[in-house]
Length: 184
Image (cartoon, rainbow, N blue to C red; front, side, top):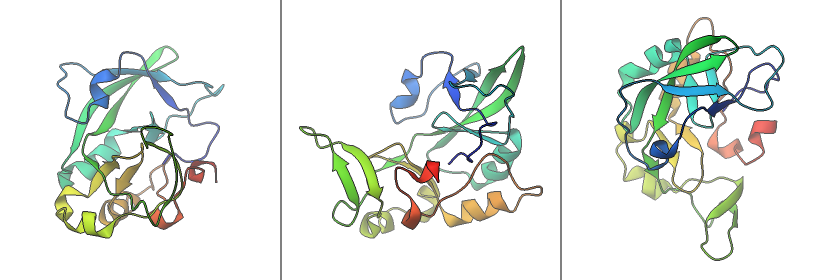
């Protein structure tokens, strides 16, 4: 999740994002085009992690995680327009989605009609579903039920062991996560 800071900008697409919403790898010959999202800070500070809400990371974070061969993750070059400059980042396209929210132990609000999850006040993952997925396939994935990106503790430890520590991100344990976690 992005670090709470008024200086670290959110990012926005500067092109169509449709191909990235289909839950599969994309085929690109050039970097995706991103820009600062609204409201853009007066003096944006570009750091190791920004939110699209998909993770957009520095080369340093990509180089840290890439050796893990995260299944279901595609590293897509991303050019971010910041004023007159174009900065080079990496979109962490987490196309693997796992339907693993425990609907009985989580506290959820649902869309009337189709039953889609509108909000999550308490997140509990279904251990039976996760245990059926080999560990190497669930080191990093996105929930099927909501736009929530999950990382195994081993990935978190690897990223947080960088010196100096990465800027612009924070990891929230699933037991502490809810829809308002980004505002705490």
